[in-house]
Length: 203
Image 1 (cartoon, helix red, strand yellow):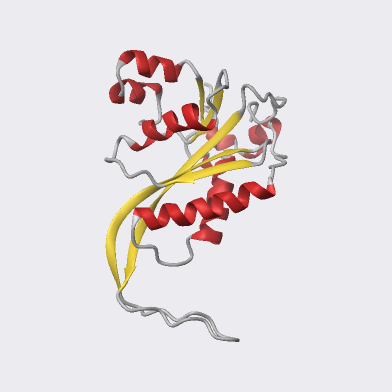
Image 2 (image 1 turned 60 degrees about the vertical axis):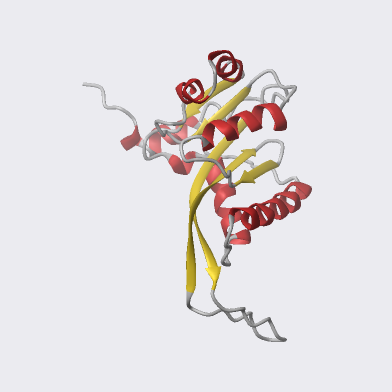
């Protein structure tokens, strides 16, 4: 919570990250198009085309968000997304303060497993990682962004990673054009009072 209360620093922005699995589904029959006063009709049958992971990054104070479904082998996804975030989205920034869920693969150690030491160190030096407490994912602002994207973009069947990224890209472009910032009201004091079960108990 203290991270969210920091003053805005353009060269050292706070970025929140979340991810979700997604089931790729292919239609077996062409859906019937919409008609006046009626919705599109789809058949109940479909073909499963495997699963993928959707990553969402958001800079709450700047009103920016990005989402992507990487087409890489499982285990390399997070490191690839972090490299893209640092080198493509924030190339001139000194450091990124990254807030995300407490998963054991979301660490600097994963960068060293994926890249050569010099490259891993280059990336790690530009990261300041803050993990959410266990069972505290609801405090991650990126979860709000992820839920919004799911409602607005993923309510229909999408069959391939390529088509999924096309849809995600269109949603991202429209969302960023609106520059929707987040006014976060839940402070550190609120967390200590309302989330006592997540704090360690001292004997």
